[in-house]
Length: 348
Image 1 (cartoon, one colour):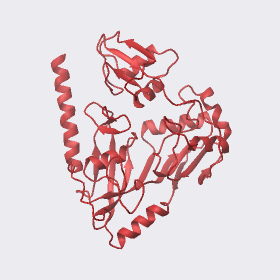
Image 2 (cartoon, one colour):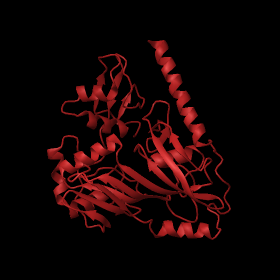
Image 3 (cartoon, rainbow, N blue to C red):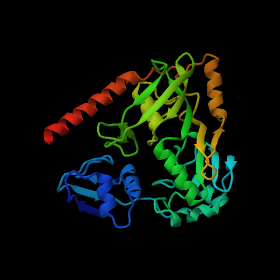
Image 4 (cartoon, rainbow, N blue to C red):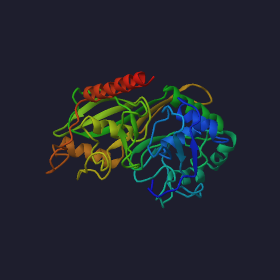
């Protein structure tokens, strides 16, 4: 967000101890709590100039600034080739290619996946008229993948399907598995990374592990080891922006080719992250549905080079910022949480 951007609205906290998302839902006319959460997650809300999490407890008199979105109206439909893994009257699942942004964003000039969705399934454009929580700029979109992350992505074709799939995400009954190639080998080879993630106050394009941020959990298991890299299967327990990328970087094993949270490699020109498997309850029949997508050619080529003994980093030295194992990151997160509780108790 530009430093000189003027807030669209400024509100003063009129209740002590009220959650930020509840405050916005109450004070913004016509806004649901879910819409308030979108504003917070997208970095459009600041408290006395600082980014805070949804559950932040306001103090009476604090100034809450809401900034405008820079994205324009819903983009026009565009004919972009899509690889459709599954499709019926309620749901579509796409195997998204790399170098394709999912939805309009500031600075994005090329047609996005949403333009292709509108072209193939134009009925999704009316979903927001039937569902107040639906984002009209992201019609039919259930979840997101980063521009250069490939794999399975869900599109709801009607409002009822969107509500069902959204509820499954909230209740964490959906199983999403990813493949990732990382620098080095995690120790232990399998584990759970439990560390809160929020938008980086120093750079709103990035996410970071922060004391006061949303709880975030990623399970991982080593599938294969190479000379200076590993192939992991990751399970998303929560679904924060850049979650797997941030968590693996935090334990000292960033994803290969991830220029934002790690370092580039000559073996692949993007982050080596692929949404491989998805298990959901069908939004109309409630039957279990499991879908899979094999990694694309550049990911398979990377694995072939590593299996032949090539080094992921070539002549580059390994990353210096080795922050420790998953257990270390988890302990730090729990320690920060305990410290926050102690400070809160002293204040009361």
